[in-house]
Amino acid sequence: MERGGGQTFTVKAGSGYELKDVLVDGKSVGAVSRYTFENVRAAHTIKAVFRAVEETAENPFVDVAENTWYKAAVDYVHGAGLMNRISNAAFGPDITATRGMIATILYRMENTLAVSSVAVFSDAAADR
Image 1 (cartoon, rainbow, N blue to C red):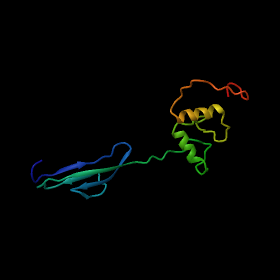
Image 2 (cartoon, rainbow, N blue to C red):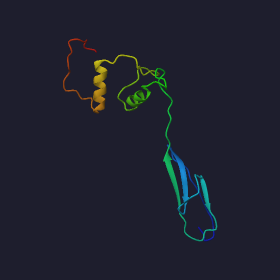
Image 3 (cartoon, helix red, strand yellow):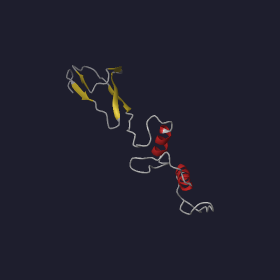
Image 4 (spheres, helix red, strand yellow):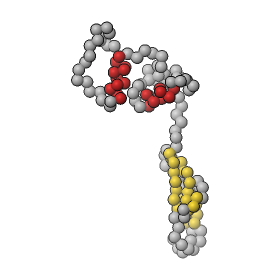
């Protein structure tokens, strides 16, 4: 750039981020998407500050109302991959968990699905 000339900078946030502030020579000029240095006679700095955008996902489960006491727990166990839904639209908060379901959750909590032996329960069918 020529001394006394100008330079325009365009600021754009990447996916998952939003522009929080732009600092010119250490001072805030706000969350502007463009800034122009005019009649430049000395060195300047420009710094863009971004923040992650919190995604608000819609409730994917028709059987888990937003105001239920267990909604946060359902979101956690599903988001962490500990429990799956029972259909495309339902989580199944009112179904009875089987031993197999509980064992699967425990294995997932430990990040392992390796089994060295199988427990046999005389009070339950083999597929339970």
